[in-house]
Length: 333
Image 1 (spheres, rainbow, N blue to C red):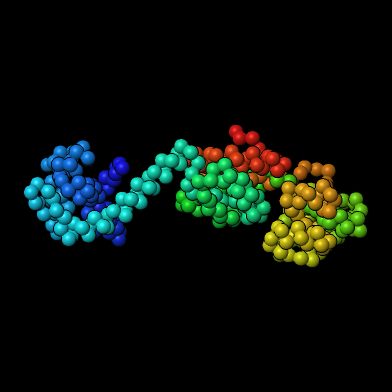
Image 2 (image 1 turned 180 degrees about the vertical axis):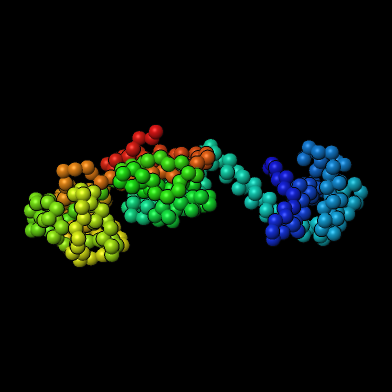
């Protein structure tokens, strides 16, 4: 094991580490204890015996207790020495295992991946994609955090997520929030549609997609201010209805889809979540002859982050799986 822990006692506002001995001296003590010899410890550490003796003397002075008794060219641990070794041994064992895992993750996918994703997109696709990935790389485990950009960005910034897939672009291509510290790679496009059930469409829409006709129908919304519906009208017609007949407000995409299937009215959803229903005409998109409403989901991570092999492998796998599902995955730049 390579220690490389040239820490010295750190002083901060609360004195963190100020009571701990120098870590290099603890390393020297650890090898003296294992070898029961300062000469053998010096060889193991590639330093002089004199340096070993000096480290030991300073450590004993720091903790105010003798750690060894010399007996016929052997160093016999004192009670304090035994106790200190019992404290150090689990730390060293865990350190060896941890460093081994870190090194392994640089060569082959393994260890913990911490990923963020939009709530509904994540619930719909991430468990299946994680499952298929683990069939290839069973030594990779996952922490998945679902949320909006306001939830996920601070967690990435604090290093608690390795990367996240987020919808950070508005329909006109503008970026939401301050993202100068992050790399942003547009990853896939979602087709945002107004839709209703096939039954509702035949009874109430009847192929009339005019502003006046649509604005008079029943709607399902996510928020009390009807922002999603008003944005959809404004985008396609350049104006929004003065008042909408919102019969259900529920802050959940799957609930909106369920309400659409139960013929409650029109709602704004993304097409890939109901691709099968659209193909069999259970759900009918209300298409307007103008630009599509596109929501972009991007891959975000810290700007200077160097992805390890696990992260690279998952991102490739995720792109392939999304493409296989028929979702419009963008090609990497």
